[in-house]
Image 1 (cartoon, rainbow, N blue to C red):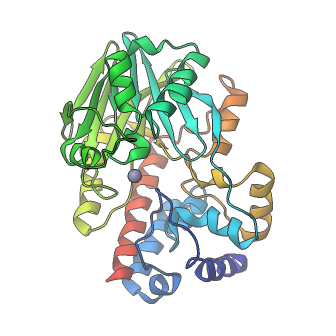
Image 2 (cartoon, helix red, strand yellow; image 1 turned 45 degrees about the horizontal axis):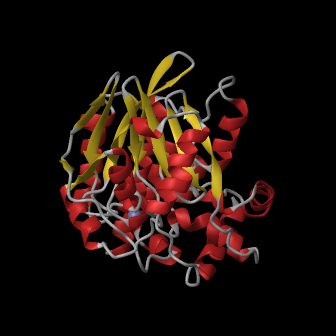
Length: 352
Ligand SMILES: [Zn+2]
């Protein structure tokens, strides 16, 4: 346990200098001291650690730390290493019908249905949509002419930037929530073209293509209309249910309550047992060797711990044999989800 306290002190010292990343979870101004000083916050942290048991302890500790998922970047910085440059990675077939295509820090998803392709997100720009996303589809043997829908998890440029190209080139229909259509369109610039407002989705909206139905839930926090996408995924002859989060920040008790409602009313009834995000975990900020060094010297280095590059590499190397590291099971998924809510509540309490 001792090295964990050491690590916490380390984070507190370095938090002031780290750059905030798009997926950073920690509220502005939150420190380890504020978290420690709030009894209410500590009650939520303790609840998260109880939920975590042994198997999710690293994830819970990371999620409940003041720096949240910025952890690995801070550890890296504290070790005196430069930031890892963003780089394209080979497409990963994460499930029989689900591919991750893009970069180490942000990617898009392709769902292969019996009647064509549903994409989730579109990378940063028309050029990336063409040169990385479409090229990646072709690399794994999928036909970009089969793209029917592009669901955009939220309206920031790293998700919506390639949609104009996909609409103009393949006639894809573009889906966002109402608030995030507004956000996306407000970000239009000459170098950042935006498609005209197309399909506006609401909570519980279903996108069906052939044999596949994707269910959408609105989870405000990162943006006002951030979506979670619930996707049936296949592995080894079985169908599982992945929740692809486009943002897991919760900025008020109401937003925490909404996340709970989404779990109770949508995700859990659909059998959610896999958690994914379009930002594949901050282990992406560490090379394999650096990750080992980090674990040896700083204790837990997981961040989201859910779909990290480390896991992606494991899948790429082992697929389709072997156990699938991303299938949590329904119980673990439920505990992970509750841990996210407890850690969010802890941070809100500490900021009061
Ligand atoms: Zn964003």
